[in-house]
Image 1 (cartoon, rainbow, N blue to C red):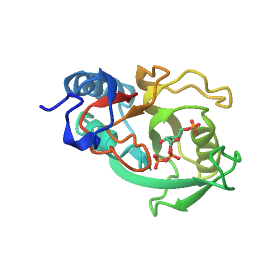
Image 2: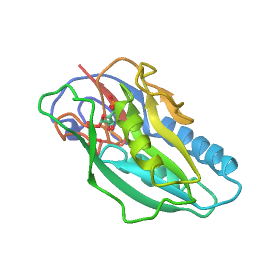
Image 3: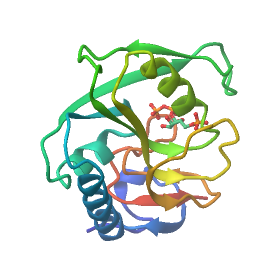
Length: 183
Ligand code: PRP
């Protein structure tokens, strides 16, 4: 598999390093799948992925969860302009699926400030799921705004600009099958 800075998918952008190659990610996602399978011995499980960043992670993760489940997606957006979030999340696409009485696993690619997952879990809790758990591939551990734990996460995120496996830079590089750190 192509994993070097000459990968044409990277549009010539210099890569500092590749902290997570495809095999490393696949191994950890399989472990997470086993953890999640064990954590939900019964009940209805709904895996709800937050687009767009989680689309590859969710696709791989659900195939490692060996119990019945449903999958849906949600699209959220921060109010306000600029690069700094205003701290208020609204739902741009809202799943049709009823959450009542279900175990809800809310999946994101990366937890940064934690604001997105915090606000979404508050919104979704009002729909009376039986439980809510948070899951992310990467956790920066700087989420001062998050009052609940990220119960399932893949890796501690290094403080570098990561792209690939769903993570983007200006919408580029989401399809890169490993995670690279751009210079
Ligand atoms: C990114 C990422 C998380 C969120 C994390 O989403 O995918 O959803 O930011 O940041 P936070 O913990 O500070 O809230 P982005 O808004 O870039 O959208 P995307 O998923 O479409 O890339």
